[in-house]
Length: 262
Image (cartoon, rainbow, N blue to C red; front, side):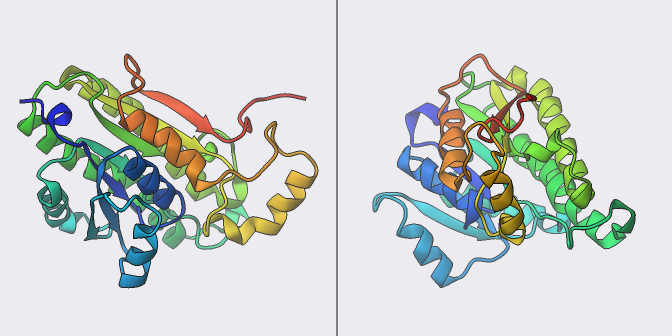
């Protein structure tokens, strides 16, 4: 039975409590999704703040977990599926940045391992586990009614030597999306990659002054900070199945920053 069209769709959003993840959660709630919000830090204050941003009728469930802990994935995945009985959309949003920006020659193994452990390794094996169960429960669904969405970064393509380990981990995510698109197409599961550019979040706050100066000089064609809602609305469009006959594509939500021009 194709559960994705007979009930409200269910989305699992990793890192869904705030920043870009919060914008995604809010946008999906506005589209009528039931949402499993996963994060390393879930407390009453953050839950209350997020609930205040979504419709009163929205159904949210919360699952705490650290994607870098592969041994905890079976519990994490089971809890996510049990929340509403299924998962139709996985949004791989959880991510970390470098421990400190600086010279590429000074990158530490700790920072390297942190970025690849969460951004790449954690996302890969979570997707593997979720997709295995999705396929068992519905081997062949309606095309694009189910999807996997990877949130990478403009740094998947634009080199950033001052945070090289982050850029490399996100470049790996870009390839991951293509590989999963090829593997999952036979099951009707679409795969998308979203590349946010300069988005105003706590993660980008450490470089706020630098980017303000760049914007003042004309940094992007749409010369402003992006907001979590900009990314959230794009993800909700994909998750809703409004982009049929499309898989493995990357979508830049960056105000045109990826365009090479002079």
